[in-house]
Image (cartoon, rainbow over all chains, first blue to last red; front, side, top):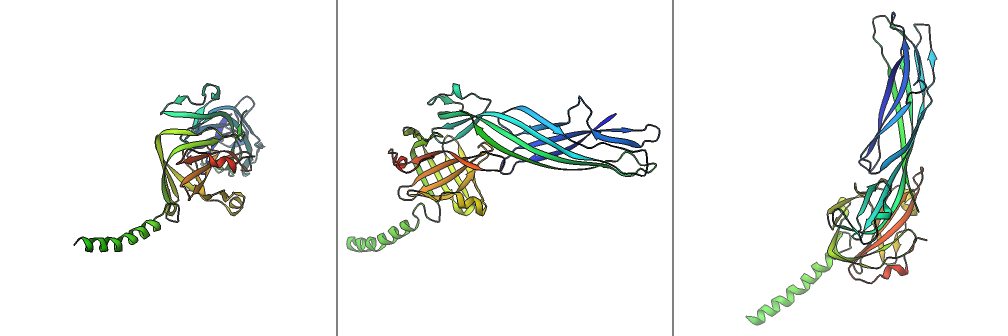
Length: 175
Length: 163
């Protein structure tokens, strides 16, 4: 049993932040012939997808991923093997939005609005005007297709992978 | 000699005044203002008391390059957002004497935040409306407002409300 992965990165428009998404799949091959005879989702107990965040302010939690790749077996060496499906992705980002008296908006990791009373001074010499907790929601989907072209003797393992990812982000103020 | 000087001054003075009018802040050439007071409208539609700032804030609008430069504790350059036709239809174009100049974001703002900026050309005050994306379809909601004021009287509370 071998594990492969499909990697894609989504970059949010307007902002300098991105998410690297990896979707895992499983394949099996015959040692003597080198022929791959099975391809499908990551086996039970393995992570089926993961997200890595770059340039995100908040504290990430509640990551939930689920992939639904199809499984295909073959004993026919001239048949192309194909697995396709999608991974759904969701996570929460906990952060505190601080507005300062000069109008600067600061984002702090985690929920800490209760410690930031109006009039208190934070790093950088900013005076707090208002602070409140917010939950940001990242959600989306990555479509994946993995193909192993019909086998030819002498050709090493060759995966044709394509993927498309779409993520949205929105916030929810906490009261 | 003195008489000639007076004559010359009388001739030049109106020209200077005309040039000055041509450069009036708030017109198509953009503007630059210095403000000493801020006041905030929070999400529950309550106005704060007026803050008197120790260091004045300078706001410069450059319409040709679609930028807004705000100098306060640090210097921020806000980039203009290009709106779709649907988006621009739902944006309120004026609040009292405040006229809409554009939407902005910068890299320090949270991902789901953008700012709508308005300028009152009568007294060079600037209104900033904060918007937040509230669902996966990209629906925007106004979550707060603030006014950068030269003077210390919150006249905006009479006509700006989030509810």
